[in-house]
Image (cartoon, rainbow, N blue to C red; front, top):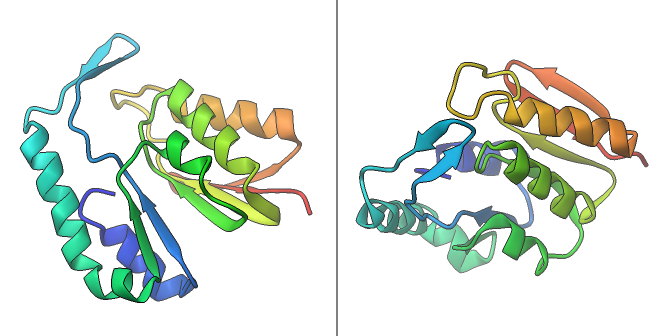
Length: 158
């Protein structure tokens, strides 16, 4: 989510009835493979980012077009109903991407889309976790995947 730039683009270009923005805005350190991912800014930085996003989309929140969930994505998935599409850009570890794909796939309507970021962005702290999780998911669910730049687009069979 960070500052909401991509979310603003999604609002302009897709004009959804409702857009759910999901992020815990939690600044934590965790291990991804052999790397330690550290958020040196601390939790006040995460709180400031959350506040910024809420201010940025205040009008849309008031109209009900944008719903902000300050929770991990796996927790929110259980509270949502049918979705046309989902865009995933959370923790890039294999396990987290796999959990997001699995949790949200059940919510996406037949013919709908699950898309996400950093499919082929190798050389970063997350290694090959995104690509491994997406490839495994597509094989096991019989889905089609399209890769555009570093984005993946999975189409759920109709």
